[in-house]
Amino acid sequence: MYWKKLSHEQVKQHIFSALDENLDYRGDHPILGIPGTYLDTTEFYPDAPFLKDAPYMSAMVRNPNHIGVHTLSEHSVLEVFQGTQRIEKELIKLVAEEIFNGDPGQQDGYVATGGTEANIQAMWIYRNYFKKEFGARIGEIGLVYSQDSHYSMPKGANILNLTNIILEVDPETRLIKKESLENKVKVAIEEEIKYFIVIANLSTTMFGSVDDIDMLGDFFTDMNMPFKIHVDAAYGGFIYPFTNPTSRFTFQNPYMNSITADGHKMLQTPYGTGLFLIRKGFFDYVKTDEAQYIPGKDYTVSGSRSGANAISMWMILQIHGSEGWKYKMETLCDKTERICKKLEGMGVEYFRNPYLNIIAIKAKYMSKELAEKYYLVANTYEFEPEWFKIVVMPHVKPGTIDTFLMELEGEVRGRK
Image 1: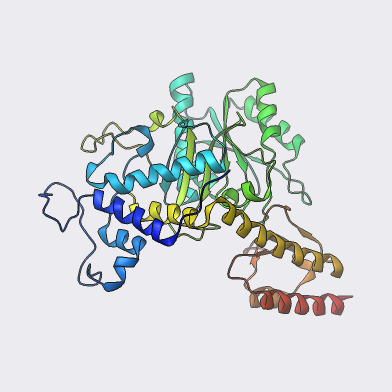
Image 2: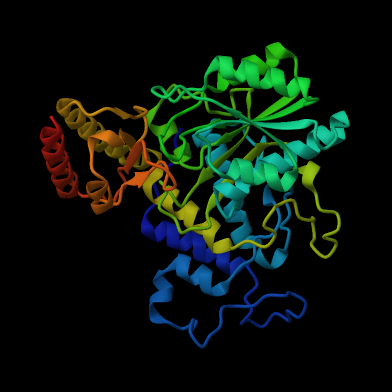
């Protein structure tokens, strides 16, 4: 896991060089057939002085379309945007090979609108894989995930006509109960489910809990049932690999076939920057042959995509370098650990994965007023909450942490 840090000038030069390779709507090129153009100049005027030092905003104004999956071919899907599409390919290669330890050139991917789309993309691919390779029918494919999983799982199951198989977790460790897995899969098989799309969480949204991918993979292997595992690392993808050197969530683990990692969480890129990565050979199952007017066809849920979003992810990773990013993530974990030590001193029960910056505190230790004052997130807003969540992000100031802990300690003493 290593890539060199670039200077601001090097990043700027690389982006502007790529933009120069794109055809410019304002240039002398006779572009007549592309159903797109630059941003409306009434509001987004192209000669704003700051743009010459702002590569991301310049890309936004130039408005490149990154439709398609650019890792599938050496050639650009739309050659008018070949410069910035190459940057997206560089991003996919960096994340797949340096962060998730993939073999060189053996992963495909694209920048999706977010984790929800990326998770549904995986489900779509595997549903079609089972249909084509095994003759699976609708009603025979199950989607296996824990009760702590993101709501994109039931959403995707609903869209794709998959059967939900929801696993119970231990209320203290938040790990999937092995007996629940055994029982739920047994019932599913009795109900004619023959193929399994399995979701392994690399940080659940509420708890920051991490599923045991090897336990899931071993179970279905021993059952001799066709399965594929997709990892939802929308939250944990850009922190966990840097804080846990023994992570099993890599492409060297044969059980991990695809993974989602959002840029607009830990990476601090704009919303609309989710990353989807998958092993070579699987995108063909969702090739949209009807997209005849697109050179290279389309394989994605979203279709047209903002090239500027891919550029933003590349820029952030390059400006920090691997060592800088590792330091930043470790610093957040250090701050999180400090809070946990204070909570332990108060006798407050909480859940936290040691490699992540999420703390879920049992709701019985604080008032709703205190939770609302500091914008803590409850595990439910329909019923009485059992947990309130703290996420230690870069904007969280030490003073805010200290005042919260002081007020919480006052409430805990009052209860005693």
